[in-house]
Image (cartoon, rainbow, N blue to C red; front, top):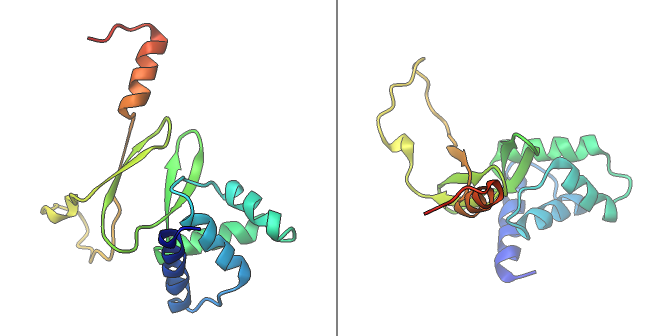
Length: 154
């Protein structure tokens, strides 16, 4: 595991600890799973990886932990039309938003924040946090789709 991934796992464990979680071996493994990939993982992906080391862990326990880690801000959750709910480790050191390809799930981050503009929001809420995601088709997938359909591109 690279030093960057190790630091990321430590940051994730730190947030868990500050939220009153006991740092168990399973939770250490969870942090390792997410800190060592930039991929989106479905609850089943995580469950499959965890059961290799902890055969008795239940899917419900894994799912509950993923949701709670998401509420803590350690994980970000995204909903893909085809793939359903997936999770990815949050960037804990700075604020950014995502442009996500619905075809290959490649993600670009961008630092521009739409919340910096004045939004005419209903309901007089005190905003505590926010997320902003844009879903689309990346350039590479568009080229593949165009090639597959026989469309001529200039």
